[in-house]
Image (cartoon, rainbow, N blue to C red; front, side):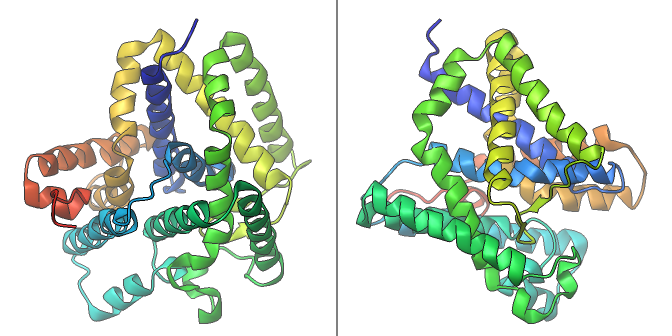
Length: 335
């Protein structure tokens, strides 16, 4: 049966919902096994960049870069200010670390500058070079990312205490690998749509077996694999593409089947998937504040990570000033 464009994008939004849930789970090592956390890091952030590439549309308007920069940076600073107020962590030292960004500052704030720079650089490449030249440049970036990871960056995960030479401002070096992931989504759009169109229960079980085989090999110690974009930890030229892509196909097929056969549930998940940024910004802070008063398990951690952020996002959508500051929605004519 032909899949309508609407269903295709609903499946992508359901996929983004699943990914943001993995982000929430991965940010609480006290509630999940360390092995599970490591496996989540194999794919969840690479897939956000791959999905970003899939959704990216080439735009030659002169104002595009300026509007995109404001769309990302205004909420970036607004949510930081809100976080500081909620956590009562207002200090010059904290502000300086935030402005430096990257591995100097804890939490999720590395992602937004990295995604913004990925968009801007990919947009520039797309405007100025042929696809063949772009692919060569992107391949060089991918190789450079691995050389930096293998021969330069520390292997430990205590990034806040790394020497300053390894704490690259705004994690600019992560663009060396985020752009290749972004390019996968952009250049393979037609293949992604074919996967959506041909998704069925048989393909779901087939890809599930492959992913579970990778997980079992890792848990049994036969295959030790690690990928962490924030830390710049990626050491395998082949698996660092293969594993995120395979797990991405698994999640995409799952999302498509949910969209096909459980439509009401899919609509709920797609709402979450369309609003991942406020969830990404707020889930650590809100859970941290509540966990000071009461203890709860991983399911409640996920719920509290999602619901208040969605409520806040809805409130922002009803006020034009909050829309500007927390959604980056600029009124027409301003820029």
